[in-house]
Length: 228
Image 1: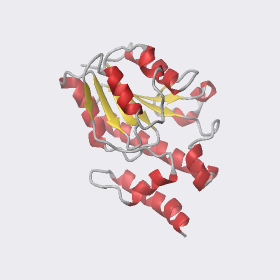
Image 2: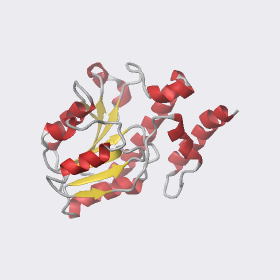
Image 3: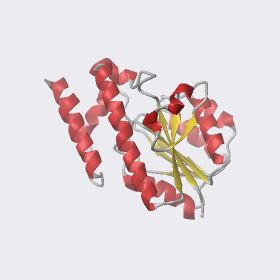
Image 4: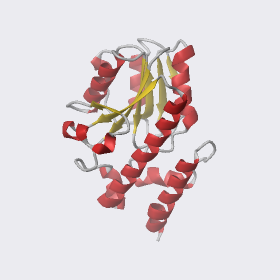
């Protein structure tokens, strides 16, 4: 049976300021609270997947070396992101995991509304499909989920400029030289208040009860306050 690693990229809130762009509008304390709750939702969603699929190993990919021992990450295995820019850290984590697993899937901790169907689809794809990669584009031009089943040169990750409108497109172009890419449902991650406001209109179909409760909490605690 194929072995799959799912790695959630996180910062340790007690060590590093989190969601700094969101904090410009909400304040650092509120952005900090949102990030912590977002991590919890993402963790529960992955635990739901792993309970049904024993071939999945979940990881927290931790940004800080000193954060590796934080009890906040006790629920999953841990892998250190390493030093450098985002591309360097993506390359580090991918290389460390792909030598141990048949498939590696990346998620951010700022997309707590990701549907379980998307995760199931990403995992199941590698069990029966020929494509070497899956990717879910973000509305801002990046990507919120990635999966791969073969080793990659680090330049695939480091040659890309992140947080740009064409980030996902450039990554797909590079991956296309190696193998096929299967697209997953487009979604968004939360970086700015305008992203958070999408929760007012989000399609709630197939979201679980915990996610629905989380979105209701966001609307009440942050968005309604901003309106007032």
